[in-house]
Length: 166
Image 1 (cartoon, rainbow, N blue to C red):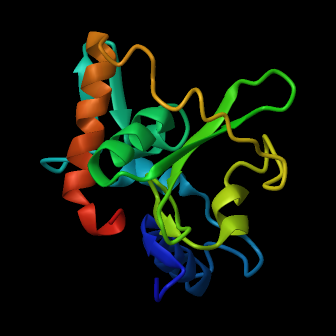
Image 2: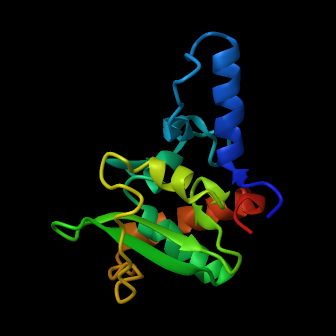
């Protein structure tokens, strides 16, 4: 890949640079990916309503529904799924894909920069302390109605921003 950042990584960099230029961010401050909550999914909507009590936005696929997103990426492109688990209680921290060129891929897009990719999860792990659990790579209950809806939204997002993920 020519550029080490692709997709929402570039959007974040542009937004961060603009905020630094305007003085909204100090030079050493970094912008996190919470701006994903303000990205349109479909029809000028920031979030999609699953049912009357439940809606999702793009940020939810970075923190919460990442396993559905990585599963959808795998199904569409054949990318390998990697799950990162907490070393203490083995709870899922993040699920993402790696392509044949070694790019890290999740809702944010693609990057070759491993340190930058894992920096979003510094509160949970050091990027050197992750482990793969290849036996648990797909959501087990994907047939549940709400899980199928989440997966369908992943497909919509990938199709809308396909150049970010292929």
